[in-house]
Length: 208
Image: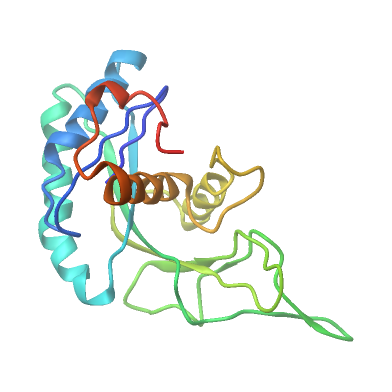
């Protein structure tokens, strides 16, 4: 898991995909934010990658309460609102726009939040990266916890904007930048370092 604040705090947590006890690391990110901004954020949005449908119940019952606990412990005077969004890059639906003469890929920023979504979920599909050839693959987002009170349109716009903020690429990517940073950090640790990185590196994007 990667936590990123401004100007930068990066933590790596080794271990299981879920049930990884994020309390200490999220508290560290909040403390770093407080140090630079002299207060806690009013809203916190967590993008959680690498979770299948069969793991959602466990995620909601164990990981979300741990995040809520860390937020509560770090906020004595204020109470930041929290949203947790599960990100899935590999999904099967494909979407098209039909013109008079052809069928084309939808434009970037297209959101599908009905018909193809599940009625029992607060979910949507977002197209944030163009396809070099063939059909474009959307990314699926499932909001499993939300007390921020953001309108769906605002949540979708925030997600799309975060797809613009990956430092290692001049254009858009298919997932929000924090998720891509997490992928890069995890790959570096698994392939090269084989241990938890030094905390002295936590203020830099050393894994890019």
